[in-house]
Image 1: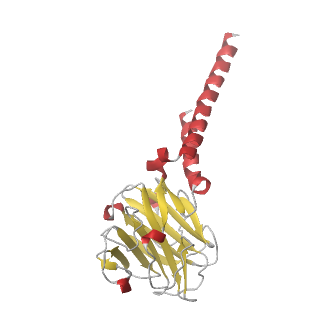
Image 2: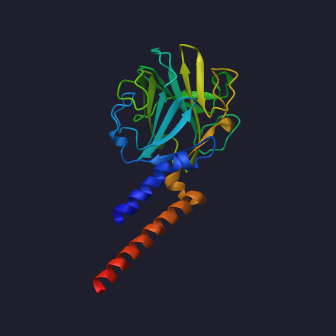
Length: 259
């Protein structure tokens, strides 16, 4: 009985991202397997990122989860099959209080991984200079990881080598919230094209970072479950159905024993 309830609960949570997400929202899931991720910049073994939410931008994939003190993000850029070491890159940005400001301020952060690069870059809003998109480069957190490389035969989506990126972001950098503003961008140096989530963002300058008021959102479903009436109702109905079914089965067994 307890195992059945746990299974149904887990099934509902893992299906939130595709079932209940609104446009420009990613429902981030809790996962107890993220500590097993090998941070080598690619999908390393079959189940590595499986217990995470999934979002697409074009043909490309975003996997996301949180565990303990970290947010984990994987970008699978199937559209980029050329190897441009030191030029291809991926950037993820968080509006940590989701105030959707027109000009980024100190609660806005971006993290940049370079393909086969040795360093990760951390940007924080609050700069007075428009030519830096109002961001300052700051010292990286000691536990921050961001790695990019080419995929191999273990990739879940394609056997054709393509750029992939893995991020491990310490939540301590910007604090815990149920909702963050979120923006993602990758750059393919072979064709000079940028690809972004949300896809509706119209970039007039490939170097500039769009302001937070144009970003999407990531939502922590395990902390915000009561905020979502439909998923909560679905979960409640399923949970009560299991209890009612169990009682009926037990009642049936009792009648058989009596007779």
